[in-house]
Length: 174
Ligand code: FES
Ligand code: FES
Image (cartoon, rainbow, N blue to C red; front, side, top):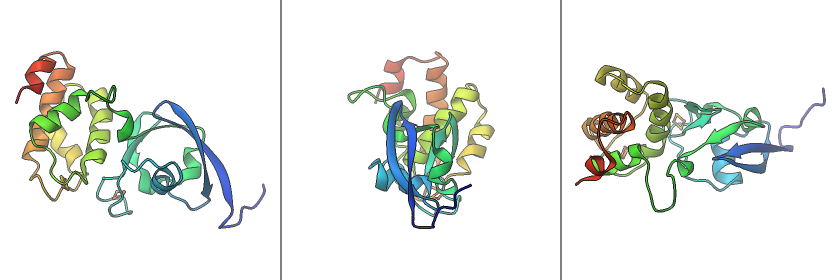
């Protein structure tokens, strides 16, 4: 196997939000830094860089995880979804995003992309979660602004809409 110098870059190709993109990465570059600095997608935020705050969460092959705990080279050839890919179009939000807006589930917005990505995976696997289960997942995200009440309400509401129990209009109402 060829040895790669620490500052040598190699091409990394990922399927980002459904589009193939290639950038250069050193062997130690984190996926977070690759997305932000090589690909120019800054929606994925960087907080602790230690796997604690959750704001860098993305989906890799559909599964939510901390992009600060993964090397860019480990993502080569894989599907990566970020917050930039959540909305169905430039003029529309998805159910989670609408519920966040309606319930004031964000203030500064620093934690928001990570929480949205965590719950886009979680609700796909667990469409009818208990409040306890939602709290458990929210516990992996540090939010200094909201006090979590709006987040809880938004996530429970979005889940209900995704199960077809409420309409888009109900969720979008002020
Ligand atoms: S920046 Fe990745 S968990 Fe905090
Ligand atoms: S909205 Fe500011 S940290 Fe969560």
